[in-house]
Length: 106
Length: 144
Image (cartoon, rainbow over all chains, first blue to last red; front, side):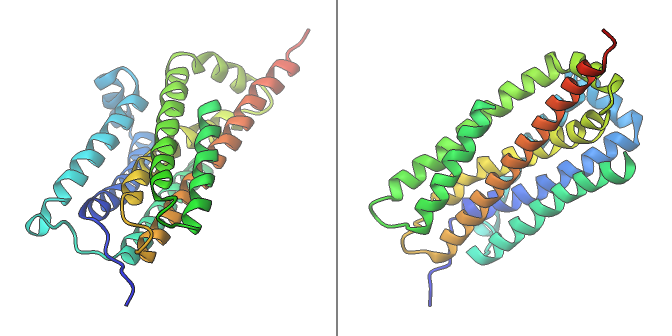
């Protein structure tokens, strides 16, 4: 049987990557649909995009760190194939949401 | 743009090395994964600074020209999907830290992540070209 185990950080930060990619796309929609959200993000750092980047990267780092401590310190129990397909699906979906949203709503 | 191209080149190099992963190139694979992430961060910081500090003037020119979609679609999408691109590039060295010589599943994971980085980086470069053309055609369309 082939070795398909990957490190706990590979699984944890892989899942965090997927969650933050989707959140990135949803935050785009929230900003564009709500002036209040956009204005609040503008106020925090002086530019909505800087706030957007900061939120996503803080959540990516914290999410990966926390997920690595789940399951008794072993991290999420996913094999390489599962984390691979989850990342591919999540990242492609998030990019398509962004590209599609501006195509339709723009 | 220079750092973005360097990221694409290191990612493609990494991709080919991973296809032929062995004890002899494992250290180079890990260094190339770090290089790709560093180049992407440099591109992001340089591009982000330009976007926040200087893009406003270009945006005004584009919106008055014949290609307003260069901003309305291409810049609006680019400024957001590059955040996902940076996340994926940051993850690349983490995925490459596994033993790729004995673990075919981890090898496929790194190939997928490197593929995503290369495709998204090329997409960003293409968007950048259209945005630059948006400025150019607007300047050419100005009355002399």
